[in-house]
Image 1 (spheres, rainbow over the protein chains, first blue to last red):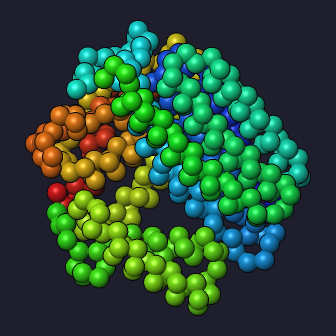
Image 2 (image 1 turned 30 degrees about the horizontal axis):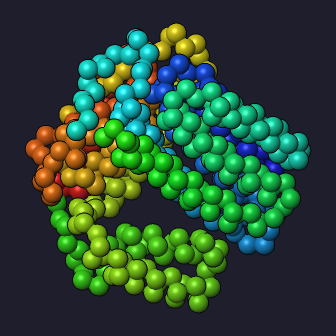
Length: 110
Length: 89
Length: 178
């Protein structure tokens, strides 16, 4: 039973990580590429680490909850690194694809 | 059954790492490459955790935590350099 | 909004709690020695680092904060499935866009939390807070701030702004009382 839970969590995690990387390759411009890794990969890691937590809690003596730490850390840092990357992209005036709406909402740097 | 699933997930993460390397090499801009590196370190954490699971040891946890911390700091540092370390400022 | 904590010896109660839990998780044990050490660290570290920090608004409604956290976690999961479908679908269907959301919040800390939740939830990444931090005087707080977000698939701009304001910003306003 527990083996099933671990397997399903692992597969969900692997799928989300793969989707994030596919988004990284498939999307046409930088701003759209950013969506895959910040969201899908983070959730994939959370699911995979939950699987690891269940696995180590059942195979080894005692409860093992320290995998939560990595999930927590990634959940906290993913938006910040995404923010830093999109800020540097706007600073470098990277082109977004033509059908992007509301491009005039971007203000110039000081 | 778990061994097979771990192998499948290994393959999935391997493919994602290859896709990341492709984006890292192709670019075309520097923020794209930073994004590829950022995704790569997260995927390598997944790989390390999976390796620990397949060996049945929790020893690799500390290595994964260290990579998570250093990866975040290095992403922010490189972005900060791009933002403020330009020649034309 | 309140900046100062109730007790002088416990300047940031929630950070102390977090430090306590993180120490126990890192050592993966709940033995008496570790609990004692965690308690000492949870009191000493905030006391030692508090003088370096800029004063931030404190959480005044912990119950609501917890409910909001659960809502955000649920939204992260559902939004991720939507984003995964969008990513795997054809590129031509997607119409990305930049949207400027007017904010009622004025302080840095609540805005940071809002920007992070927006980044993690519904197909959006927060890009910038206007007016530029660099263009402000030291310690100056502008009256009206805007959050620039990039949307993966922009269909209805008004509805998106309304969702962000009602679902994520209103609870934050309540939690920090500002």
